Length: 294
Image 1: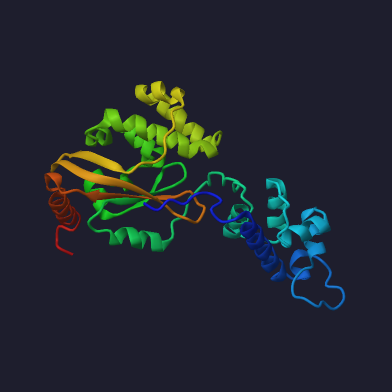
Image 2: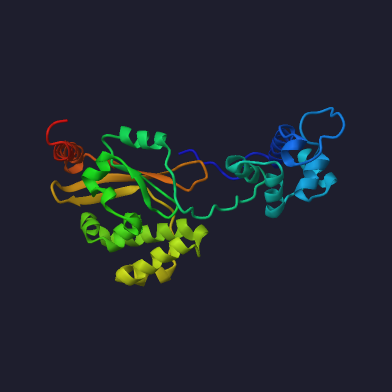
């Protein structure tokens, strides 16, 4: 397995890349764009270094050194000010922090999480693998037909009911699906705590936790332990009401746009003829949904 270590590239290379990035963002802006007078004729495109420093509230000499790749270090607050001054979008802002070896500021939970049509098409293309996309709070945002055939129709669930933690701890039907519930549930909770720590205190997260504390004795007992664990790929055993035991390899993939969303894919295993059972379930799903063959 290939392992990438932090700071594998020399620090000088990071500083040089950071300086080049800042200069490129500065040169694409015009004074009018940022509310500055155009003034006399300019020899180079974009803003001057002094103007960026003024907009960000930093010293012109210090900013020049930063752009030149010298050994100076910007704080999180200064990087945020530079990102605002240079009109960086979310991806560019994230890139700025990575180049500066600083943790990017965490995005707060959004009131709603939109899903691009391309992601839905990708999910639909996974005809032989149940899959869904979860948001920052582990809400299930979109899913494919295979997921419906195995886990049930998420469209029938509303609000917090369509959250992974709610399904695991407060949904009796979903709990019955998990053969090894006693083993996987505390692991799920520890993964969720580690993943949601960046949003601690947000009202939506607090509401979900309060609901689970009231409705699930296990959640109420385990949540105060503060156990955390990284996400793992593992085998999940499902007890399907129509097809019996089915085995899937569970894998999580992060959507690398800074949104905190993740793609969850269940790959059927050879044991218990899981792939054949899934194919039968999909056929039954299509027949139940389209009884006239349309």
